[in-house]
Image 1 (cartoon, rainbow, N blue to C red):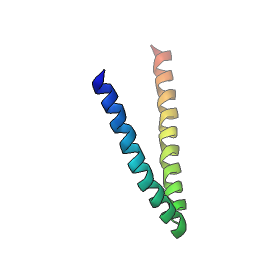
Image 2: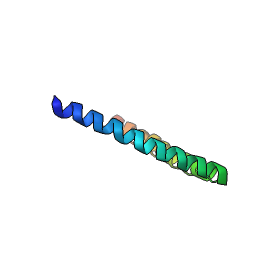
Image 3: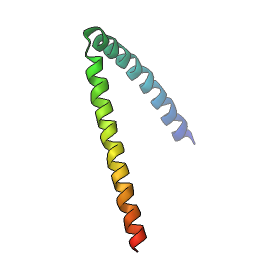
Image 4: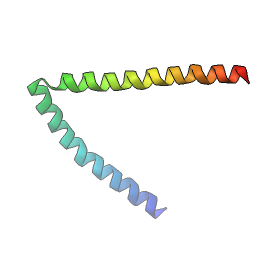
Length: 67
């Protein structure tokens, strides 16, 4: 019980510290115009993962029908 409480507190403290650093980095990238590159790269990665999952789902569906 005590470990879970301490772990939760540690996670919350780390998220506050990293959240502040990420905000500064996002502001810097936004002012340089590079935030759009980051958004495009992330969108491409998520589109690739989504496409892979759809293809995998179709393959599994075909294998289930065969057996």
